[in-house]
Length: 134
Image (cartoon, rainbow, N blue to C red; front, side):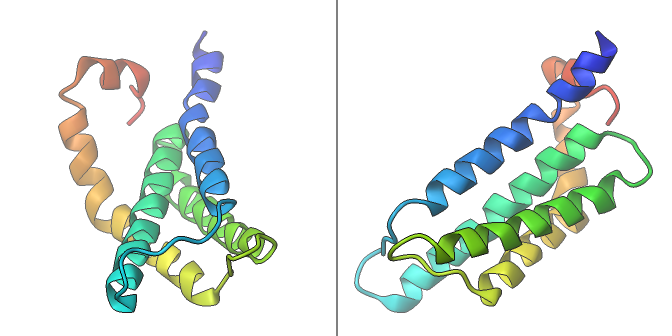
């Protein structure tokens, strides 16, 4: 059962990756008429979505020595592949700027938010049972 649980912990990041892929397959939308407001909202979403991806990957890899680095690398490469994917979607564009923004979100979560959030989540019994290795 322990081996199965190890693989089940990778299910949340895979589901999150599928949601990112689905969302980036949708036609481009804007918020209101102000370019800068729309830009700020959508780039904040990039930061959060890739920060969450990093966090889910990091939880899935547990206490392995390289868990942090592997989660950063996988999330970054997924961001790069998603930007490429967007170049194939009508009305969407993939940009290096967005890859950098995605990476910024990954780094923010890896350096500041992940440990803070995990400490709070450890108080929840279901979290401790699902991720005992964290």
